[in-house]
Length: 577
Image 1 (cartoon, rainbow, N blue to C red):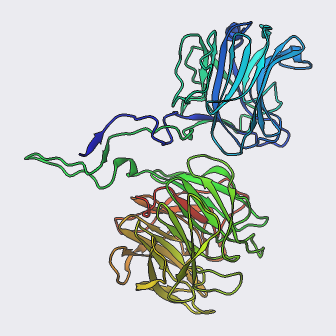
Image 2: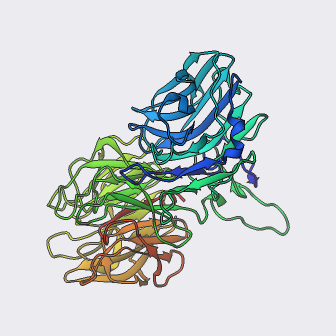
């Protein structure tokens, strides 16, 4: 039986049931940044006294070791405990809730250690004289007091900081709710998918993907900015992984059996025309570890995502629908080649995490491809002599790489992509100053040596990443054959072996860039071009199903200087869609 679904279904493990979060990021080492403030005329609602209450929200912190405050109800300038009513803070890797009665701390509870770049739900509840803090629905600590929680009409309620220009939070907050008069949780509970305004709700905010000031109970929020040039408190759609939004979805072999019928698109409509692309591994002096992201279905400049653990210029990069992985690369220019495997969760902005696994050997100028479960790295140098080695990891578990098999020839800086079944590798130089037009293929789910697929329309010593694919077609652009780069794009039909066909031209001759794709578009970014403008921040795209020249997409604006030898991946490439 097929399913035609046109509603939102919560709790299925997707990314948007909690419809947006607010991003509080402190970029300034002096700890100044933006935060939200509740208008003082509304402050009487926060007089907790001896009432039962519930405070809860989701958080994803980019810094858990420093003293940072997701929210606080306190005097503008605090000199003693009596100048605060309550606050929540990160300190030493734990989350602390504290309430105050005069100079006395009451109801102090802590979660225990939390990790960077991870979504958690936290709730702080008073029921009678018992204070409890719950992490992901499980009681983490309790305290006991019958004292009242202080209130002062002149105090501010700040979200994203403690006081004026101090202790700014660095991370994400989603669905912040305060209920004054009800203990919603008195035992361990299943975390809800989205918070709603219930009886006694005095604050419900950080829910809108487009309006940082939206609040559900009628409060007026103010955005307090450290600079009008940059707004660091921003609404986004990167929310906890606790539900899923569906538009109209065709799934499970849906059929229309009528005299006048239509054929729905292949796959599910949730896969169509979507996708986030990631760009990292910039070759710069000094080294730039910045990760940027784009929305593949639109155009525009890339946006800051976070930072790599370490430099990864020319790394092999691949992704599942949830996780992006960089393997190897080097600290450019002229830096150390690494065997590091590092990853990010694509839907959640934040820094990369070391997988604690390693490649078989340090490697640079390798190519990456994947389906939704397995990532394969092919060719490259280890660290200075090119070889024909392929190695793989299981993306969800990572760990050390394992041997996959061998390419048909040594390949220096190949390019690669594929579909759910087959990986395609455009080989690079088999020997110094020798160009190659060989195309190999592998079956991703098995291991073994590569087989010959056919020939590219042009030979190149370095390919370097500029391959993108839908489920049926792969396009490959650029390449270097001394002394010139190429701007040629060609394509192949992945399921059918044979020689490549001309597709069109890139906007400039280039090689060595990031490739990203969804089922419709291939996007190339940060490649190395011709003198005198070798380095470039440019991003360009093609429509994979339609031959033609590439078009301008935007730029990578958030790095120091220009860029080249980047590595990229996406959550919706041909190995997934």
